[in-house]
Every structure is written in structure tokens, then in C-alpha cells.
Length: 216
Image (tube, rainbow, N blue to C red; front, side, top):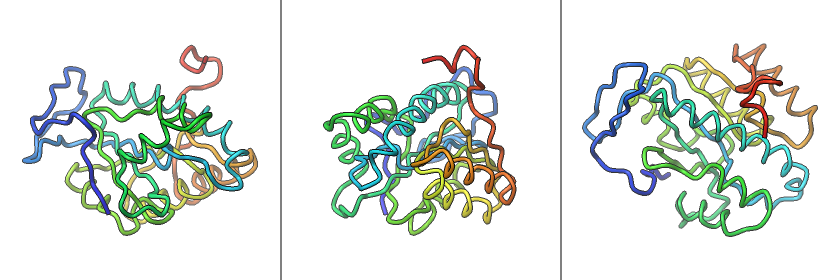
């Protein structure tokens, strides 16, 4: 599996004036990040039978996540893209992002809204969970992460499997309800309820209804 620095990332640690926790620079230029934003499968061609049903909710979740990502970045939170390789083993995350950006519809708009930044990290995953056969656990250990904000697609599949593996490893979880999506509202709500009840995850939305940031 691949661990990638997003385009333009320098080995020197970036200066983050608004960082709310003390930064300890690691040898590879990373900084400790007690909270990590984990974006699961948002960079997605949606080329499967249920893709049409998922497209609308997925795009809305991507827009909400883009706002959340900016907010967390200002607080010094590290973002990690954990993306399916869609069966193309010779690809890398940046090729996948460029491919989705070249498409039409929701796939293109999600790729544009969630364009990776210079400090973002990325891994490719072969199965549902972002932990399975990837370097994610090692990376989170290097970042000294304690809490994961898990967002992405789909709530009842890859987000759920990733959250379960994170729970088993002792991470505190926040799965913002408005930053994940499933094919049906019922599947979305049932998965959130399960994660709240069994995995002790917070599921409050990043942008409560009626708040200025929740507006398009």
C-alpha cells in the first residue's frame, strides 16, 4: 500500500500560527496531531450500480467536509485521505484524484471541493477499512493521534468498517453526520446509530442546521 505526500509538500514543517496544540516536528517533517481528519473514499468515480443513488448525498457530504477540513486545518489538524484503489494496483492517489477530476458530475465536483493540499497525506486501501493492509496504523502512531474524525463514503460500508477498526485500536471517534453519506437515508442513519451506540462515537454534525456555515 502507498503512503503519499500530496503535491508540493516540503520536508520542512509548515508554520501554523493558529495551531492550538504544541507542535513537535518529526524527522520527516510531520508534526504531532492528536486529532486526525480521515477522509474515506471521497475521491470516487462512482462507477458502480448504486453510484447514482449515492451521488447526491455524497456531493453534499463532500461540500460539508471541505468546510470542516479548512476549519480543522486552521487548528493544526492533520488530514489523511484513505482511498480505494478501485482495483488499479499500478495507480497512486494523485492519479486517482486527477482521473476523478476529469470526469463529469458529482465525481468531478467532489474532487474539486476536496483537492488535497500541500500538507495532506494519502494512502490507498485495498478493502473497506482504511486500516486493512495499509500503513495507516503506523502513520497515526507517528502523529501521536488519539482522536479520529472519520468522514466519507459510504457511511454503512467503508466509513463503518474504518470506525470499527479505529475503535478496536482505542481511538476516540467523531463521525460528523453531515460529512458522510450512504445510498439511502435509512442506511446512513442506521450506521450512525450503530457507531454511536456500539463504538461510542460522536455523530453530531459539523454544521448544525441553521448555522451560517451550513448554508450552501
